[in-house]
Amino acid sequence: MTRRAKLQAYFLRAAVFAAISLTLLALVFIIGYILYKGVPYLTPELFSPTYTSENVSLLPAMINTLIMTAMSLVIAVPLGVFSAIYLVEYAGRGNKLVNIVRTTTETLSGIPSIVYGLFGYLLFVIFLGWGYSIIAGAATLAIMILPLIMRTTEEALKSVSDSFREGSFGLGAGKLRTVFKIVLPSAVPGILSGIVLAVGRIVGETAALIYTAGTVAQIPNGLSSSGRTLSIHMYALWKEGFNANQSYATAVVLLVIVIGLNAVSSFIAKKISKS
Image 1 (cartoon, rainbow, N blue to C red):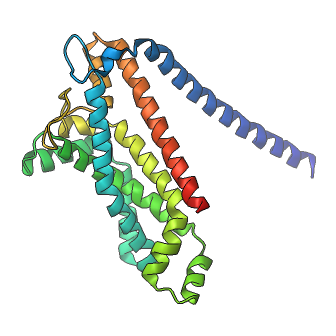
Image 2 (image 1 turned 90 degrees about the vertical axis):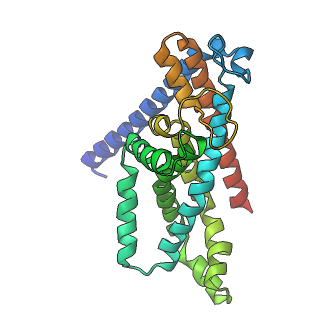
Image 3 (image 1 turned 90 degrees about the horizontal axis):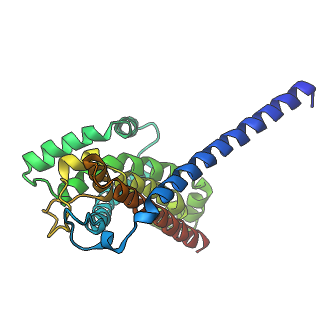
């Protein structure tokens, strides 16, 4: 190896380590700052089932967040996964429809969330008459995360070796059995990674939900009731200016929920991969 090649390799190695160090430093600083500002204000009163002006409880918002996340995934995951299966396994190579769908999903992924919020407001709140409700917010979020789930699932299916498919066909298995018994289980870790990213976008969303789900700080009586999520709760407390410390405490709870969901999904992916 020449001296110039050694210098280039050293420079690239140093650049990689610098990028990793800066990323980890930023992550540690953000998490540490949130914990430092929020943990002292995590009191039992914050987990009261009722929100009042004297006690800005985050429990209703936490329940709304879990409901919103579950409903959005129930709508978006089957549509996204089955759409990706069709694009990868059933649509012919060079199909114009596939190219159109991929271009559309990539375009939708870059649309600002407030645009989705306005769309959901016009379609679900006004046109369909759902009003500010949990179901309107969940439907809007499902449309928002659908391109992400489709693209990650598609890439996960493509990463499965063709030898798996050929071996299954050689043993006499049909297309449907091969897809659901061989290909899909092998792609589950990648699919779960996309779902985790979708969950992160759901729990951190504010603009789209303000226009569709509303900001009522109570546990909803049903799917047609309005309710705020943790991110909206945190934004509302900060905007009011009287409960900024409780806003940091809400951020701590939100951070714990996201980390917990990531840990659970990673555990499930490892179990499926081993099996």
